[in-house]
Image (spheres, rainbow, N blue to C red):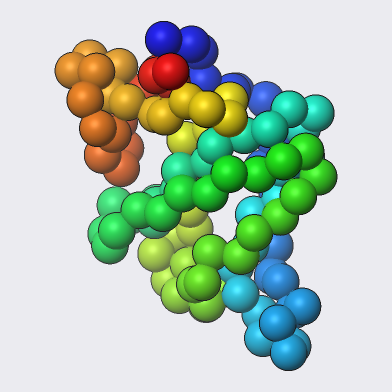
Length: 103
């Protein structure tokens, strides 16, 4: 196991590169590649994940207003090549869990 990335590496913004549509997008502002798992802050719905190289961004396929209606996103940020797991059970993470990163 490795520690989660606690630095504020993820920038959340509206991506208008897809024909002007404002998808919710995530950008890696840190100097290392990251694996980012994200879910709604209100713990509803499903979670998503993406690999992000330093400086890279990826849209989530979610509308900004929909994300806002759920209180925004919560992030589980791990070094690339690792996956967030529940810190107590060491099993798959659920939205709201304390976590570690598993190789």
